[in-house]
Length: 177
Image 1: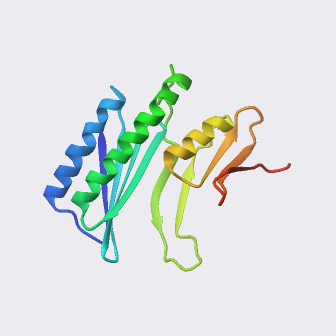
Image 2: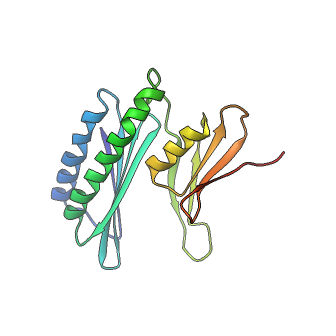
């Protein structure tokens, strides 16, 4: 597994890098021979330390975050979260993607551009719109643990936005041409 460690407002020593790499590499057992990438973000926000891990295997994403007093404890919290998400969604992946599971390239192309906060655009992301059904989009949104998901409808080819409402239900926005 390729591991990309990013530190923001902090510095990671060699011991932290080694332990993080060892623990994240153990997740390879869930994906067999698939080559994957793990983006691990360590950042200090005020007095707390935030650890975010995002795994990508052939276009499929799993993401989890933990916040605490130090990065070592955060790893012990965030890795079981990731492992649980992988197990939860593994059956769905196996059923719906038997042959082409993890066969596509990455959906997101993060260039790391960050700007000053304050009502301005603070991050830009480009990604490939993958044709899929609404149910597949719901699964992807749950895997990413995001409140929205943009996708291309498999039947019509139209761009649609799936989002989680404040009451916990889901909403779907599609443009009228």
